[in-house]
Length: 364
Ligand SMILES: NC(=O)c1ccc[n+]([C@@H]2O[C@H](COP(=O)([O-])OP(=O)(O)OC[C@H]3O[C@@H](n4cnc5c(N)ncnc54)[C@H](O)[C@@H]3O)[C@@H](O)[C@H]2O)c1
Image (cartoon, rainbow, N blue to C red; front, side, top):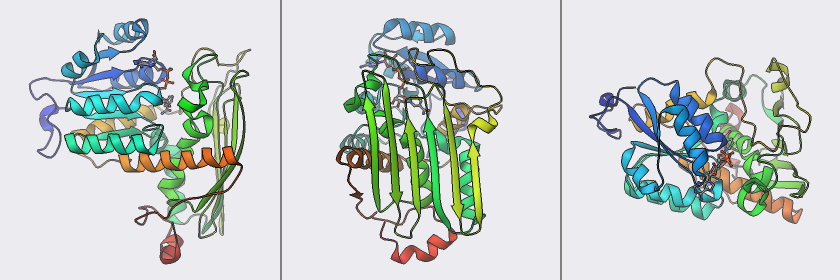
């Protein structure tokens, strides 16, 4: 992309340079995925990496011809865009630091661990007038955006029941931050949030949630089953697991006129499950059997938004909504009780044709 092409409403990305300079905070699994995606984009370069584990930063920097920064403040000065790939509990302080430095922020999902932290980072970025873009990458998986389009188009008539499943192996292995459930939120927060965001994007805020789960950090097991209901009668049930030996997702929606379904097990041409699973070495990053990774599509879009050439496919407020819903799910699982969600202040932007008709009586 050409920084000079940014219109006045976009952020001026280092107009003197020929490249957009990216600084990666967090050189772990997703930091590596983002960096590989940037490497495929013309006019974009990862120039800096910062990580508490200097060896990780060095490895990532060596792969991309970038500099290792020991001080975050130095990296913030040297880049045009900050990409936060740190554990969720550190998103808040790092978004605040990037905003204070006046740099556009890309932040991995979940935006933060709590709604209060989401509010703090949204307010800080608004005050600093810097974009805040959150990596809800499922919106950039063509299968998931096509499913949404198809439902909204009315292909299955009035949606009645949606089933979504997202299962992965134990992320990070023993001692990893993922297994401190307070910090990561476990699979019901960290992993199901992908599907919760898709549901919010497609159907708006549900009326209530219920869930059950099993978790044991010592055994690296975490599992949740969630049920969400909307005022118009729609039911969604979600399965979220960190107990499997490989990554897979599936989706099924039944409506008044038909059924639509998708399963990564049908579309991934080659699956390898190694003895001992894929745990221990980190988190399995979902892939799509497509030429361009959805992460690259997402990050290219974010840079277009930062440059003022596109409107965000996912807003920070929507990312906050996903955090609120995922926390409501955690509360429901912890209490084994239904959690009723507050009414949404405004009509959600996406509804099926029938739901639009029902909008007046839709309490969410
Ligand atoms: N969108 C997706 O598909 C996807 C996939 C995986 C992870 N994620 C999200 O990305 C974030 C990172 O996850 P990950 O799997 O890459 O984690 P990870 O554990 O693999 O990497 C985190 C990195 O941050 C570093 N770090 C930890 N604490 C730090 C601190 N205080 N200061 C500086 N560096 C610190 C660690 O050394 C590590 O290199 C999480 O929010 C996670 O939910 C998103």
